[in-house]
Length: 145
Image (cartoon, rainbow, N blue to C red; front, side):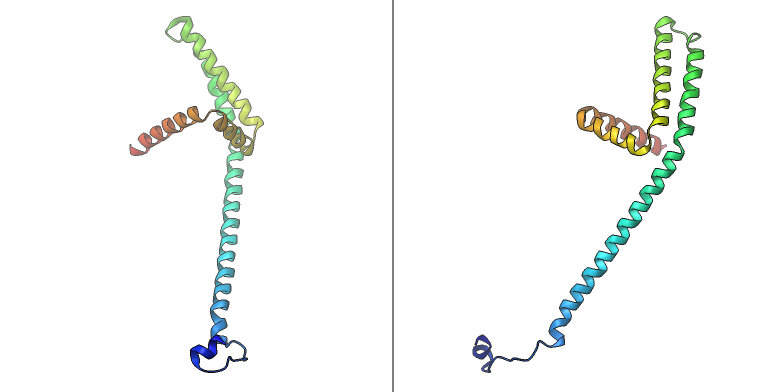
């Protein structure tokens, strides 16, 4: 009836022409293409994440060994450091923490470490922001040189 009023003719019972359906096909095709591109990008990101995780896990043992070696050297040299008993005590404490860190790196994979970092950040947000700012400052200075 509305078509009768606007055009002066009776409403058509013919099916909608292909011209009117084409935008729907184009939209559907675009949606499918976009969805495919998103899936492909997600797959690529996941693959890159797995590759990075694998490479980091491969470097855990060498990093732990280097820390352990540095801790042993610090323990050996602590007695000969100038500054007396206080400096010696601080050196031994630092060496012990380095050894503990080496053990932690050996015992935990990258996912475990990331989980621990996330937990720490949630429970200590202020300290985490200060640490992030300090690290950012140091990295910025290092990159400027």
